[in-house]
Image (cartoon, rainbow, N blue to C red):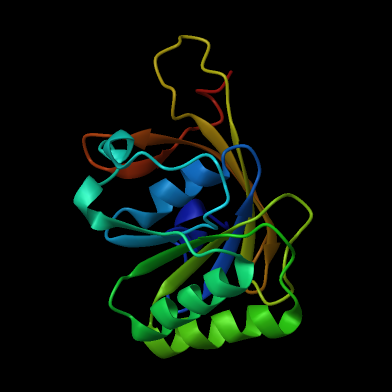
Length: 184
């Protein structure tokens, strides 16, 4: 039996996943594809530009929350996941989650039927995560596509680990898998 990207993506709902790597924020944006709450600590100097997300979803569909620290960010994420009003919650974390914190997020996602995604620094994964992805941009020799990426599942509680080269199709607002032949 072949394991394809459609077996793992879109991310399983009512669960919390993780993504790391240089392309982690792009992965999160492509995974959201709809109304989304994005949570990041207020002390971080960079920010998301909602109008820059227009090829992916309408800026009005993005709600940004900037709590003061990770403890407050976790509280906001837990409540948002539990509430279920928004289908997708992204949480940028700056320190590793302990098992209790990760489990609380999983229980909240299950209660609200919401998909959660933690954007994590490499090496900071939680044992409670359903899947952990590594995302990195790929160089497009023709220079035609700036969305070409390599996505790899590096942890999967319910399946196989695998990697794919993907690109974003702005017209259909979908992820397309790039065939191995096209990569040569």
